[in-house]
Length: 484
Image 1 (cartoon, rainbow, N blue to C red):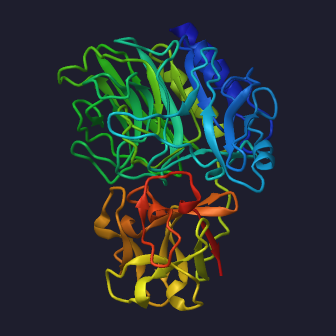
Image 2: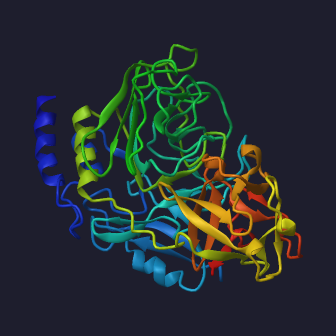
């Protein structure tokens, strides 16, 4: 162990660079884990290489105009994503992320997830929905909303049974909800819940299966049939972390012990939220890992979650704390930052025109009462069809109807496909907060509570067509043009 610590100290000295510089570090996360004897069994990122020697593709995008695909690689060996390739390829149309390449020799690539026991066919993330700056370069993360998910059910080198493993991901503390399940890690190979201990994945969000401490979001362990804060589920030491960028870690030796850690991906060290015995409930000790990889959903494709993914790895073996700390130092060194939002402009009155129909978002009969329904209608040039955006913090917005002064609301805080939207007096909750996400030259508008998008019922085009919420489908019926 002393030799390992000495080696890691040398690596740590080589991984801490100046944030915002173009040069890649000499030792990246998978180099660090390999030097500690726990090599990466899978390594996924849309923002950068995770090996100093990696020069291949990071991810694949598909454009809507002609269904052509292209791979997005790195600017240089061991470097950052070449976002300019995506921008050029997707110019004038929209693109989705269809594959996230495994940078390890195992080639455990993630593709769009198929139907599972608790969710239908998923779709790919919108390719330009999550702009980020890393290492001083523009890049894109994976913006997960309800209906988005990735999976690999036939992997190589991923832990099975009671074998040990670790995992981390860089995610966002500002893009979360309380629906199942924004996971990254080990899952069932069938897409079904096959019992306790058949998963070993990081979960991040505000869903609370057991008694919770604080308001979250929390780094949790999805071990199947429970999101564990530590111990047998509840654990007061796991108080959550809400920084803009979050390093979320979980490791599990498969027989007796698991640990949950988290840290600010922009600065500082890791906090250990739990380190102790596996749950004593039947099925968890020993574990029964199956070795699939999931991103953005639960093991049975429960796909209602919100989340952001920038990078993550799964290791072969149980990583040392020293290796985890060195990885965190490398993550903070690359300078994850969010570009300043310049649109929509607070206070400006906008019309929201559906891309498919050409009709605008309308308050039915110019109603002003709580519960007024929302539909599509030809533009009338009145204030009943005008909307103002105001920041609700953490990149979210409230959307106020100019005529009524009431806000766009998720009816009864519902979370199922088809849930209505309506006007209601401001309540200050997440059911009235919305994410405005770029899709080429258009936008999606998704509810913070549900993770679902503003959707035109059955892609209707007639006046009076109801506007509702539905999981992401990657079609123009869920895209909007926002203009004064």
